[in-house]
Amino acid sequence: MRATRQPTTDGAVNVSEYPGRPIVKRPLWTWEVPAYFFVGGLAGAAATLAAVAEVAGEHQLARRARLAAAAGALVGAPLLISDLGRPERFLNMLRVFRPTSPMSIGTWTLATFGSSAALSVAGDLIGVARPLGRLAGVVAGILGPVLTTYTGVLVGQTSVPVWERARAWLPFLFAGSSAASAGALVAATVDPPAARPAQLMAVGGAVAEALSELAMERSLGEAGVVYRTGRPGRFRRLALELSLAGAGLVAAGLAGSGRRRLTLLGCGAVLAGSLSQRIAIWAAGPASAARTGVDPDGRGPR
Image (tube, rainbow, N blue to C red; front, side, top):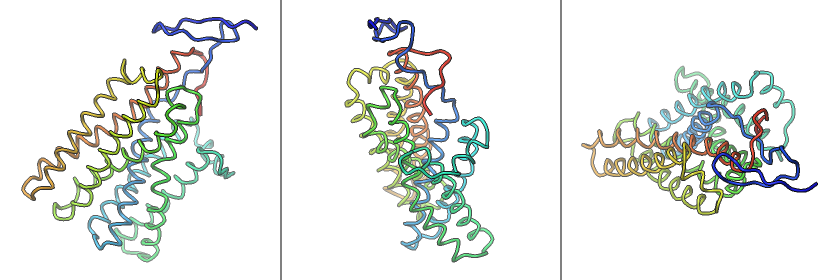
């Protein structure tokens, strides 16, 4: 069948073999998705921080990081289930484990991680089964990197150009963003003498996030225009500004114990920047699909 050229709302032109039919369906992921990306990534990075801090003998830091990990898992699970529409869909995905499916890996990781994180916190709070709780904390710490990055892999496997072409960089971007947010949250909740490792994690994660985002955009070519315009562009710029400014304030707070206010302000900015980054990526999907053709009634990639 002869190809037809279809103009889009922003002036871009796409080519379809089927007149009147879209090339790429518009992703209809709702607000729960970037929220889950944010809290799930934070939880995973916090669990890894807790495991390392426990080995290093930083017990207060480890306890606060375990609490952050458990809280993130507690919030993340309902967000994921809400996006799926019905709770039974989440349970159905636990019936089969598919190593080739990022969604299957993510579902099993979230279920196992959430249970482990909760058990590790129970050992801290009620003092029951502490050896089992410590073991659960190790399990959560090992699963943490998987939880922080699988969503980046999942997004990169869709057919949306701005996500598919960034599949090599999205896991690194998500990992850096997760480390920044986890470090910032934990650093803001522990006593200043114990906060140094979390502060370093927040600064390092924010820098890694910014570098990964810039490398990702350069790799996108023409598809990267969505990150320079509209809502994705606004949130992308906000994410970079907040993350780097926050990292600078946290780094300044490292210079002396009397700069607690700088640290708290910086941690808040890093957290806001990390969330803005996830919103930018989420918003870029529909904007990218709009440049190649939109199916108003289509269900987005899942």
